[in-house]
Image (cartoon, rainbow, N blue to C red; front, side):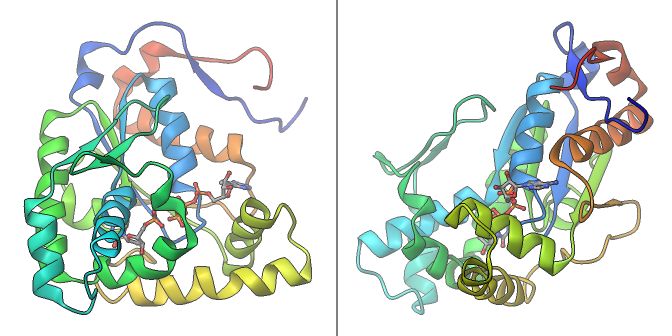
Length: 252
Ligand SMILES: Nc1ncnc2c1ncn2[C@@H]1O[C@H](COP(=O)(O)OP(=O)(O)OP(=O)(O)O)[C@@H](O)[C@H]1O
Ligand SMILES: Nc1ccn([C@H]2C[C@H](O)[C@@H](COP(=O)(O)O)O2)c(=O)n1
C-alpha cells in the first residue's frame, strides 16, 4: 500500500556498537515519548529508562510519608537517601522505592497532580539527574523525559524531541484516561496536560529543540509512523543500527 508506514523489526541481537548507544528522547506530556521509547528500545534490543517514573516514585514516597511537598529540603533529603530500583527492560515496567513497589501507584491521579512540585525542586533534580547520568554512562539504553537531550545526555549520539500540538496531546491523554476524546473527556483532561507542562517548563526546556536535536512533530502521525521516524533518525546517525533492522513484511 502506497504511503503505508514501514515498521522496523529486530532480526538479530543488537550488535556491539548499539550496546553503547544512548538514545535521548524528550517531549511535552502526551507527545508519545514513553510509549514510543519503549517500542524503539524493544526493536533495537536496548533498555529504556523512564525518568518521569523516577520523579513520580519520589513523589509517591513523599506523599506516603506525609511530607509537605513545599518543604524542599525534606523532599530533597528523601530523594538523596532513596533506594530506587527501576527495571530497564522494555517488556517489564517495575519501580521500587525503599522496598515498596510503586509501579502502579506512580500512575495514580494523586501522584500526577503532585509530581510537578517534586520535579521543580532543583535539589531533587540534581540527585535524579546524577542517577540518570550513571545509567547513560553504561549505554545501551533509550532515556526519555524532559531534559535528557539538554542536561542528562547532551552528548548522546542520537537526540530527539517529540512534539505534538496541544489538541493532539490532550486528545491522546483523554483517550488513555477516559477511553474517548469527546468534549467532556477533553475538558477533564486539558488542565492535566497543559498546566503540568507549564509548571514543568519552568525547570526544563522541552518545547523547542536544542542545537543538534532532531524534532519530530507527531501531531498527524500514527504511533507506528512515529516509531519508524525515530528509527530512521537512529539509522541516519548510527549506521550500524541498520544491520539489525529490516522492514517488517506486514504492518505490525
Ligand atoms: N502518534 C500517536 N498517535 C496516537 N496516540 C499516540 C501516539 N503516540 C502515543 N500515543 C498514545 O498517547 C498516549 C500518551 O502517550 P505517552 O504516555 O507515550 O506520552 P508521554 O509523552 O510519555 O506523556 P507523559 O510525559 O505525560 O507521560 C498513550 O495512550 C499512547 O498510547
Ligand atoms: N526528565 C524529566 C522527566 C520528568 N519530569 C517531570 C515531568 C512531570 O511533571 C513528571 C512526571 O513525568 P511523566 O511521567 O508525566 O513523563 O516529572 C521532569 O521534570 N524531568
